[in-house]
Image 1: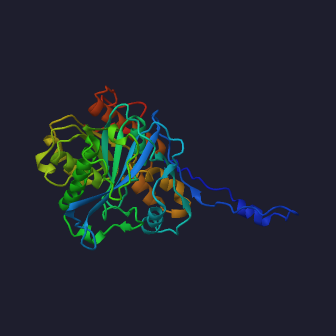
Image 2 (image 1 turned 90 degrees about the vertical axis):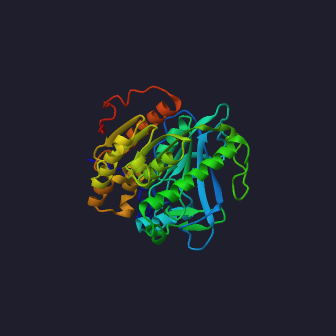
Image 3 (image 1 turned 180 degrees about the vertical axis):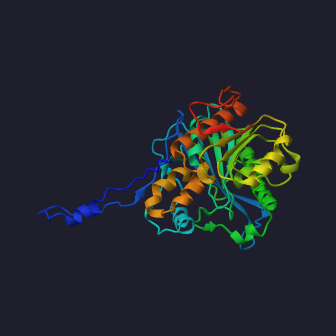
Length: 399
């Protein structure tokens, strides 16, 4: 069964309230009774820098915005850094984003949880002694760019630049630099077919690739809408000739369609994602890793079965045993820690997160995703895809 580790602050307030007064003792500072949530440190040797960039696509009206405007995106880059001294650790989400996640997603009072600090250090100088392969990340519907930080940090610590993207108004919450918080426009998203939603997300991703390419080549050294400079060395650290992509749920569908539409993406991975758009009938000619959960999804299985014979490049399909759909996200670790506050029923925990060992499930995902991108983007051999591994028994080979 899942080991649901709960990190609780010691009940010092109660002890202080019942203890006899001590003469001439200075006032005791207020005790932090929040539950402090944590994520595991990455295993690579590179320190990690991170920065956010506000992009505006002036050529594309936003199809989901409540008022007419150009399409705006918030992206975050995670990269090998040279020196993190003096650069604070970035929060998992901004305070405003965290508060909205608590109230809208978890339906709990704000301020009961202390969300993690990440291993990424804000605006630290990038290691540009060599250019690093770039991997894009797309979140699931109502998710955020932060939802797979454990996987993102693992890749960055091993020498990749990972770029996470908020699909504004399909993401749960996005705070822009002016303090404006844009939340999911469920009605506008649901007014579209799934293929149309994926088309919007694919256009977001291709626009991001265009701007990253311009940054790396020096043709657009100032991509941020507020003209904030990128960290020192970051442009020279990007290898936009070697690009991969992965995503969870609808982010997996976005990965597939982006690969279909844009040959710049050389390898992709979908984490429990469906298949929508023209890729479903036309397939792919580049490497693809499909990783499923144990969550019963006949629709997903039928989509993958139809896609499989249309994959003409390297391909593998793996399954994460005893898992749920959200096991492919940081919630696999954060929800059990926050359970005293969020109080999900046991059946919901088991349905969405499965019954396996959460930390080991994340370790397995990290290992296979890293091995995959090492193999496909760096041509580094691995034995992980030759067959089942005793180190990761929860990963089974479907085909």
